[in-house]
Image 1 (cartoon, rainbow, N blue to C red):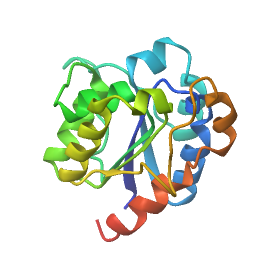
Image 2: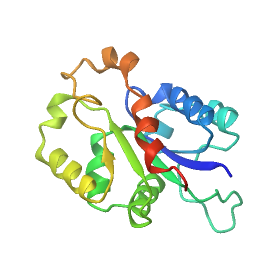
Image 3: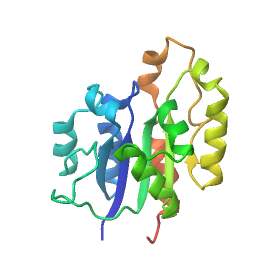
Image 4: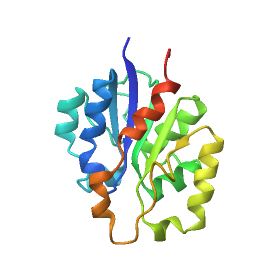
Length: 182
């Protein structure tokens, strides 16, 4: 039986390289279903054709109408990478106004293993809503991979230099032990 990973991709610098995480997940025996935030999809941060070629499933970015085919298998785990400040704060507040946020809020209620790897700058990190959101999500059981050795914010204007070293592998390493036997 395949282990199903729902992967939520936000509009952040590393997003065009999400194929790295997808390939690693597939090599580890995961069936990957990829969801883009509206900004990631409309802003060209992801390549829908490349994602579909790699996963065998179309990229989703909006709620599916009842008359549309394509229901996905149930997730065994959820990953969010890269996660933006916008997503972390809205998710922690329980917003479900996009398909990506709907998946994330529901995953908490389903008690699925969830790992989230941020990408934002130090000026954004200084906003008090960021720490509150991270605390809220961690209280809900979400593994927010924030702080050393995972992700630390970079100085404003230097994000592009951090993209090559974005630690994609932390997501799957974190989920590995929590999904064994599911």
